[in-house]
Each structure stands twice: as C-alpha cells, then as structure tokens.
Amino acid sequence: MKKKPAKAAAKAKAKPPAKLAPVAKSAKKPPARRSPDVAKADPALFDPLTPGEVADALRTLTEDRRVTAMAKVGRYRVICAEPLVVKPPHWMAGHRLARIVAYDYAADRAVDATVDLDAGVVAHLDVNTSQPMLSRDEEMLAIEIAMTDSRVSEKLHMGEAPQAMLHYWGRVPGDLSFARRSAAVVFGRADGHASIVAVVDLLDQAVTQVVPAELW
Amino acid sequence: MSNVIEEAGWKFHWRLTESAGIMVYLADYKGRRVLWEGSLPYITVDHQRETLDPKDDPGEIHGPWWVPLGTRTIQGPVRVQSFRGGVELSATFVAGPYQYTQLWRFHDDGRLSPWVTIYGPGVHDQHTYHPHFRFDFDLDGARDDAFERFEEGRWQRVDSEGWFPYSGEADEAGNVWRQVDFGSGASINIRPHQWDDAEVFAIRYHDGEWAPYSPRAGAGTQPFPAAYVGAEALDGEDVTLWYVAHVHFDQSFPYTAGPWIRIEGLAS
Image (cartoon, rainbow over all chains, first blue to last red; front, top):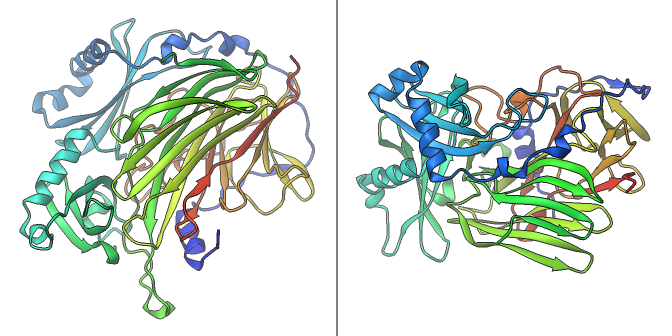
C-alpha cells in the first residue's frame, strides 16, 4: 500500500504525547509470584447475559440510592449490558457480574456500573464524563431528528436515505459536539455512495451541521 | 453452535460482543493458558481534506467517528472454518460506507492472527482507519510477566506503562514487542504488519479497566487507551496490550490490519 502524506498527518493527530517508560538496560528477573488460578476460570462467566439477567441488573442499578436522581428523572439511556469477568484473587472472581453502562441526560454523565448478580448488589459504580457509544434508541432518534430537518431534506435526492449512524465528537472546543453527546448520520444511495453528513446534538435534539459528504 | 473450539493444538472460547467484535477468551495452546481475553474494541475513522497547497489545507476540521462492531452491525453469522494447519473465526460488519471483516486465525505452530480486513468506500477517499486491538495475555498465569521491545539491536525490558510505536527496528523474525512469562520462560511475540504504522500501549491490568463502549474518555482528554497510561510498574505484573494500527484509505483497499502473534517456549 502506498504511503501518503495524509497518513502521516493523521497519525500525528491520533497519537498522544509520548509517555515512554524508561527502558531498563538490564533484564533483571524479579522473584516469581505464581498465580495459576486464571487457568481454572469458569468459561460460563463469559456467557452473554440472559434477558432475565439484564433485567435483574437494571433493577438492581436503578434501585441503588447513588443513582436515584437518574432513575427518578428518567432521562437516561441504557447503552449496553454485558458480562464482566474478573480474575482471581479479586474478591468478585467467580461471581456472575453484569456491566451496565447508561447515559444520564439530566446530568450529562455516563454511569458505569458493575452489578454482582449473585449477591444482588451494585458492586462498583463510576459516574464520569466519558462518552459511551450510542444506544440503538439514540441511533434511531438521531435519524428521526435529521430526517425532519429541512436543511437535510432539501439536500437529499431521490433514493437517498440514512446509511449509517456514527458516534461522533468534535475536534476543537468551538465545535458544539466537542463536549456534547452527538451523532453523525450519513445519508446516501443504496450503492454505498455517501451524499450528506448531518451532525445531531442529542442533548438539544437538533441538527448542528449539514455537510456535503465530499467536504467532510 | 458451540462457542468452545478445540483444534490445531488450541482450545478457546468465543462470543459476539455488543461493540468489540468477536471476543476470544480463555485460550489455551497445548494445554497451557495463553489468553484471558482478546477483542477489537473499536475502529475509529478520521478524515483529511484533499488539497495540493498546504496553505489552503485547514487540517482536520472534523473529529473522528466510529460505529460498534457487534450484534447491531454484523452481517450473517460468525463463521468457524478449518484451514490447512489451523482454524479460524470470521465475521463481517457493515455500517453504511464502512465494511469490516474481523478474523481470528489459530495456527497449529503457535501463531495467532487477530486481523481485520477493511473495505468499503467511506464518505470520501481522504480518511484514515485506526483499528484498536486489545489483548490480555495470561501466559501460564496472570502475573510474573514482563513487557519488552526490540530497540538498539536487542530486546529491552520496559519498566512502566507507556506508548511504544514501531520505530522500524525488529528482531530477525520481524518481532517488535513481546510479553515474557518469568516462570515458564515462554513469550508472546508480536510482529506488526509492515504498513500498519503500528504502536502498542502496554498497561497494567486492573479488573474492569477498559472501555468496552467508547474510545472517548471525555472532552479535551486523551482517548482510550492513551487515557489509561500512567506510571504504574509493569515488571512482574499482569500486563494488558493494545495494538493500534493507522491505515490510510487508498485505492489498494481492501487492507488487512493486525499483528502476527507467535507463542514460543511453551513446553507441553
């Protein structure tokens, strides 16, 4: 594959500041601390959550006092519910765990919880400013908002429809999507040709940018 | 279909995730634990502008975007197929103009190929893919590991977490990074694709510390996995590796990104 200047530029943008660890010149071997228990892990703990386990985990989470405000207001979206498996010697090793990630629109925060399904408790709760992926509901909402915006509809040609919904964030602070939960809806033809990109602010439920695909 | 496969000297489990493609977990080679969990958490895409004059180039005015590879984007089933000398898993994911085929190939000589083939036109030609692979190798146990990179003509130990780009140096087999188990002396050797423009983030393992649902750590902050990098010691600990490729779209697509991984020194 040919290398292009753009590749180097993109790479430079993508890289974090160098955080190279100091390199030891001598490969000194530390004392061994064996931990063979990972070889005895139960594969069933990795199995996808059943619908009942998902419901159980969500009930447990929304009843937790720490997220009362989120549950009471109800402006949240469940992003994902997947099994989580921790290694020994962690005290939760061997427990059936569910990791629930939700987005709390009222507080503009992500909620990342680990629910111990064996014990019926929220074992870990982290509320942070990260932006998890879009839920299916949010994808559908983004399409609906974009489709009803006149700036989008007047640019669409016959046969053009939403092709993809992507989790998007702006690169510069002046861009609304830099800090706000946003989606990009790509419109185009069924043959894969993209025509328009609409950026949707999911907090205000409004289209903030309409850009011809070739200028994106 | 059973999600445990025993073939070609390997025994491993797999499942389709919501966002990180096919996850392989509890993988053993010749009866010894090699991998706790491996996946493809995200492929971000960013765009450049096509201009001949640097003065007119506004740079990247738009940020990156991504779509989860998982249950909502998979096309057809996860395929399990034997090939001469091994067995592979594959699945195709489609999101409009972006198309990916994720592969996990297990060879009977101890090689492991977690790859992704990228194709589809994108919204225009000037865009770059950044596939992020995550590997939690537990070579013969979770701890007692070290991370090394090939530099200045020899393997050198890395003391603490960090970001380690491919500098162009590699051992005679093309390996650039490796994870070594003290107890057994076995190693996981990682050889990047020549055109991947690859880098590895080596991070100390913490339970639950990964971002399965986003590369976005917060406004104005480093994305994951860079956001995980601190100053924690790696020597003798449980280490997690992220392999990140940077692949610019051009007419030579489709392109298959991802490392060659070889397990060496595991006596049966």
